[in-house]
Length: 109
Image 1: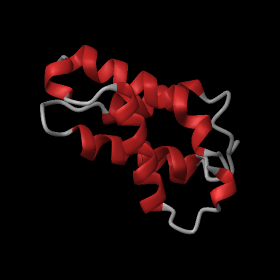
Image 2: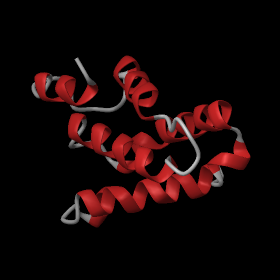
Image 3: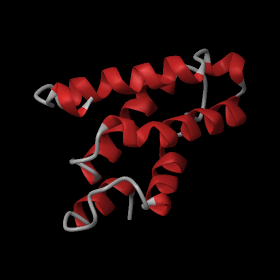
């Protein structure tokens, strides 16, 4: 079962990102870029998976997962091919969340 199917199957699951390390690890593994030029697409996919599974979580709850995602992406491809540091990657993740959920209240950010 792919991760999107798992999200749909677990709609009644715990909706807090805290304490769901196994699911987050699956999302990281599924969305790591496989070659240069795919970071932005894959961080978008990662944001979508996390927010679908944890709709009531604030973006800050995802920070550790995004930092882990970046570290593993750099480990896989090398920093020269990722072409974004961890802070830029976090910023991209936040922008993507705001695009996915434009009505999200600013108080949750």
